[in-house]
Image 1 (spheres, rainbow, N blue to C red):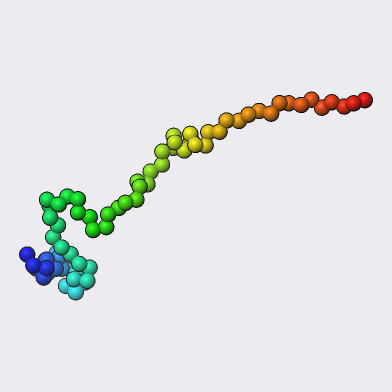
Image 2 (tube, one colour):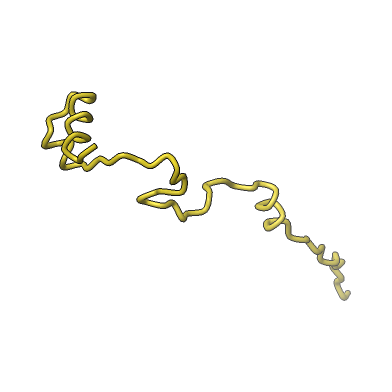
Length: 73
C-alpha cells in the first residue's frame, strides 16, 4: 500500500480532507514490531504510594522535660 493510498483511506474513513490527513501524517503499523512508539514515554508512572509518603513524614517526637517554676523567696 502506498502512502497516497493510506492517506486516501484515512481521509475517506474519517471524513477529513486529504490535505489535512497528509499534514498530520499516517502510516501503517507493523503488527510484528510491538515495541514501536514514535514518542516513547520515559516518565515514571504518576502514582503515589501513600504508605511511603507516611514513612517519610513519620518523625519521632522527643518530649522536653518539664521544668518546675522555682521561685527563690
